[in-house]
Length: 499
Image 1 (cartoon, rainbow, N blue to C red):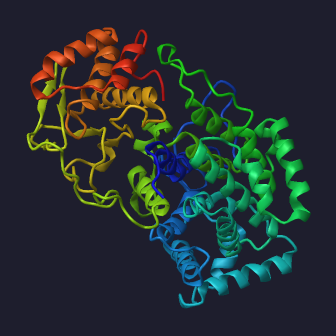
Image 2 (cartoon, helix red, strand yellow):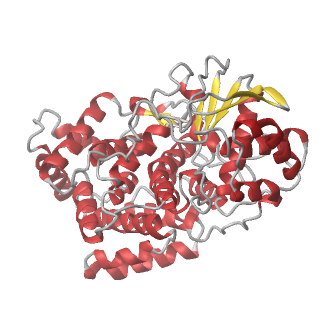
Image 3 (cartoon, rainbow, N blue to C red):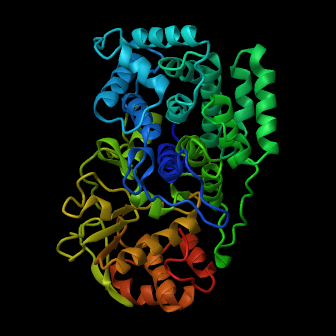
């Protein structure tokens, strides 16, 4: 089924926001959370001595699942479970910077098993461990489950079966499976409708004899602060901590002129998730998957997107691609994105025009050669290929989800503002920045105008008039929604004033 641009933005947000939550929580795992008045930072450290912005086992294991789901596989099939299990074993041997005790035991017991039949063998090892200990409902399968929902957006029953099957590979306790079903149901509904209604809808997908227990747990989460659920190594408490961070956290007013955006809820709820304490990276990764599904990749601060990275050199664009391919049944769109090396521009002429208020910013399009423009960093406002800017360090490539079509963006003002502030941050680091969209005629001048406002204090209409004078000969045609958004911003704040 075809998805709207807004729904695809939400799909793209699932793995991305989970990874950002993970990286935010890493420095505080089993340590003191940030004190009151101080927000969490992706400062690294933690139990795995992580680099700033590096995600941990929560996202690493989600990637193991996503690499199979992104092929279009039915995750209920034995061969697909074999390959997920094989990815887990490979990860344990060569990528696990941190690993839970239970997961380590299960994976270690099947490390020499051939791929064929590995899923069954791993599930059996998980069952034996459960029977030996009497409990195996840790949070380790819930933390990685969000991407499973993306493979079954049209079929909640199949989604529930897949979520439980993937959970059972390492966590045989039915409570762990229940939690994964509930959270996948929440992710699915958030992607489809942009609501948080799916968590309670998911109760219909778990056995009737345990529904009352889960209703009580969800109700309790809505009555308490996340820190009330600090014993969150247990899967029920982990779900409660994540839901407590999301549900009671207020959605800010959408008032760009005042610097307030409704989608700041994603940021605020992730801060609250880290504030739960104890297994902070896991709680924030769990919350992040649902928050990304509700608000989208475009709601995830670009500062975080630029920083987040991890196992097998996966960065924000890679996580987005895995999510989109999963939701697309393993298929790219009609032009081969994501996954193609290059995207072709809609016009053949390269645009290479210095910003009138800062000649360290070059306004361009998809045809513009970054090196020829002297750029050491790129801010892309359109889809780009994997090798589009191969000579620019990947950490200096920022990709913004901003569709050049009125009504096609979930968070237009936020995305546009973030793009302009990303340019400002890169300039403050000393970079020559290429700012571009596909044609360089609409999104590029809109973001360039917002950058003018931030740097010079000009109002939006004056900044847009400046862009029109500069680019009128290049087919300037900023769409009415972007024009209205730029004009609606109030007195600019300092360029580094928000995350």
